[in-house]
Amino acid sequence: MKTDESGRYDDLTVSELIEHALALNEGQLSAKGALVVSPERDTEAQRFIVNEPSVSDVIRADAQFHLLDTEVFKSIWERVKDDVAERSRYRIHVHMGVDSHIAVPLEITTLSAWHALTCHYLCHCPSEFNPREKPVWKLIWTPLSSFGDAEILSHGGGVILIHVGKRRILMGGALTTGEMRRTIMTLLGLILPEKDALPLHGAAVQGDGEITLFLGPAGAQKSTWALKCGQLIGDRALSWSSNGLHRLADGCRLHLNQSLPISLDQALQFGTVAENLTLTNERTPILDDPNDDLSTTIPAHLVVPLELLNATSETNTDGPTQLVILTTDPLGVLPPLAKISHEQCLAWFILGYGNHFGPQEGLRPEMDIRFMPGFMDTLLPRNLNDYIVILEDLLKKFETQCFLVNAGWHGGHSGQGSPLSTSEQSAVIDSMHHCADWRPFGALGLSIPSDKSETATAWNSVDRWPDSGDCLSNLSKLVSIIADELQRTSNPERWLRALEIQCN
Image 1 (spheres, helix red, strand yellow):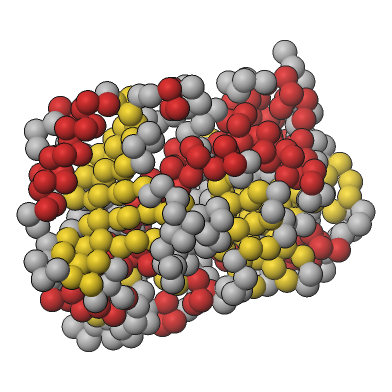
Image 2 (cartoon, helix red, strand yellow; image 1 turned 90 degrees about the vertical axis):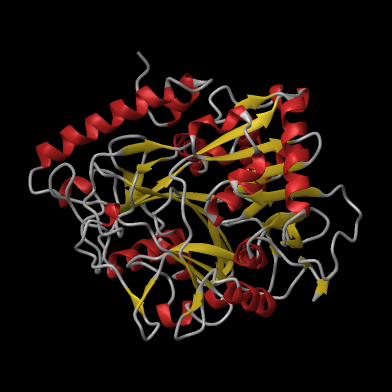
């Protein structure tokens, strides 16, 4: 343990941080040994980025950032730094990235022991910090009181300030550890494209000599799908470059729901963190009733090391042989599996189409259609074309086959239906690997397997509906919605043509 005996703790181990968290009443241990915390949570966070040429020249016009004056950031930074100097604090030195050649070194300072603990998994804790002596980014996470009476606090929620030129990040308020991870990924979204690398919010797996990359919106069960295909390479934080796929973190943050990819007993062992998990007097978890309206409760999350998810020890692999875009179509008209071209894959990546909730969230699939470019939105702050150019080159270099999988919903009426069954998921994975004969779906340029599956319902979504007319009507509606969204891109003609949508 490194300390100067004034309450300033550097690079504590997992066990030491848990000991501190318990002593400070930040949480309690579950019966299986996980640290259970119940943090307060600001419902929204405003994001600011210092206005400088390195930012204003590349940032998207619709990026969810407010521009901030350099002097304002400087004054807040100095106030926060002085305030932290008077408090007990935890500092941890980590890399975002396992390979030191491309890793970004970070010095993270928090006032909570359990926040520092999560950094062991949401980043990479190297045996030697910054051996290549790169410029170090500094992140400080404090309560809003440390910020004083800065005008930017007037909205009342949490705040995130990024100064690219100075390599500094400030986080203030009752933010989630997921927000910290998103902030660091936003940073990578700014700087990795300059190295021709693409940051990704997905899950990658290797099995049977193939590497499969799953991308998709929150709730699409990327981790669950990946673990059906082999051994996990990385989850939630990846980068892809001409050198292949690269793991950025030692663990991940999982939403605790009915589709958790590992058993709860396994996930709650000593060293992991459970956020907002209710315990009985015997310190065993109380799980929400899947029939209840979970939208009225604070979601529970688990921060776990990748070793619990059967991850490979390899941190770098070749580029993916298969890229799967997972979506959750509340209109229920996209097929379970479709083969798509590279150009179509780029179009779906730009769209980021899905529903606000995944099919296993215990909620009805309300008609809450979302478009989240790159399935990361705020994590891709640059102009979208910067990422598309890199992805297009990588798909060609690695000759990656591309697929679109609708994880839910299927059949029924609009806003109703069901996710794919376990047997159907297996049929989808098997067909991705072995199907050689594909036929046109009839819309959006998609191709579906020609042969019937012994374990899956019809590949054509029209055949899954009790009334084919209702399905075709919804399909027409979806095409129209997608066309409208593509019209907002910088090159709508290209993407409309890719999805075989007639240009007006």
